[in-house]
Amino acid sequence: MNDLIKALRAFAGERDWERYHSPKNLAMALSVEAAEIVEKFQWLSQDQSRALDAGKLAELEEEIGDVMIYLTMLADKYGLDPLVAARKKMEINRAKYPAEQVRGKSDKYTEYE
Ligand SMILES: [Mg+2]
Image (cartoon, rainbow, N blue to C red; front, side):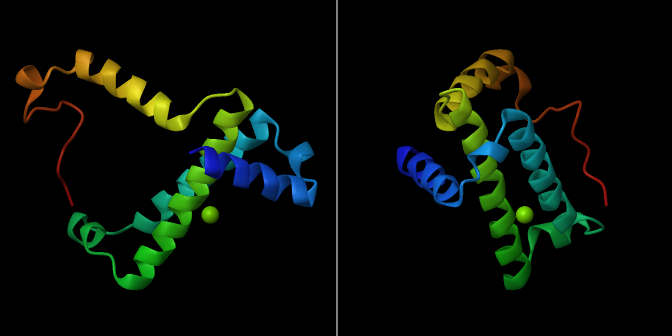
């Protein structure tokens, strides 16, 4: 994670782009990139979404990279580590959704085409 943070800082620094990287702008860019992931799946069936061809998979990988970049840059503005944040949130989710109580159940998930 630290290598990525350093590389992102260097990339922005070499281009004098830090001035554009306010937390607000990074959050907005993150949201746009997340929407670009959604766009890759727009109108696909459940089965189609599970079987992307090589071209679509490469496109998805690029968008996942974009999301990771902006997420990391946003977290870096506050000295946060996204991996640490994810682990902390998993602990919260583990307590909130004990496996023995929720296994196989979800009121928010419906399989449909
Ligand atoms: Mg993108």
